[in-house]
Length: 204
Image 1 (cartoon, rainbow, N blue to C red):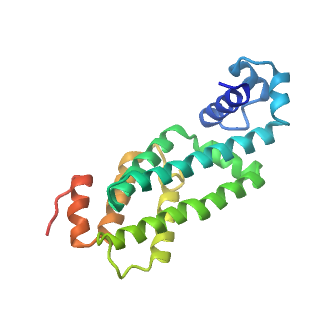
Image 2: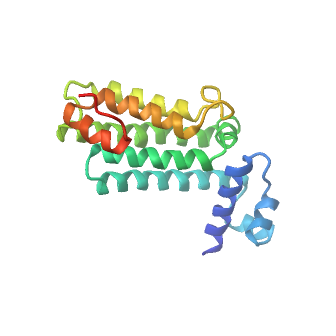
Image 3: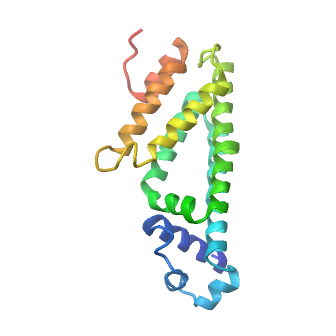
């Protein structure tokens, strides 16, 4: 692995575990197995490293969403695969990291907000369009409203003020919200397909 990638991967792992503020450039150099001087040869400062790291993460998420869209049998499967992916993210990302990006790195946080608007919201909208075309989602949905509702719903999952880890299990929160969302937008045909993925009883 190239030195630059190793440094970034190490930094991201440490940021996810400990937050950003408590991790120093020296910590990153030591964990990466390179000198502090080498770290600064590749990244101007910690702000630059955080910015590059977040851009790398967001681009990775974007590619995952595209992959789910291209390789899922239908819109519901795509939605379920995204759910599983976000659950994994929730288990590996320390909420402190996101809080610190928002508080101490406003320029970088704007990149995150742009990602939410341009990628996440767009991905949800595309899924809704696909589901309607496949006859799995109701055709009377206002996609713009429903997509925004789903985006806000997902954001609350990762907000410790709404679902503190001491009181709620991430998997159960994601499962309940997604089940509620899917059953609210699906047709009878879609609900029958969803029942298999969600392992719920079809009351119809």
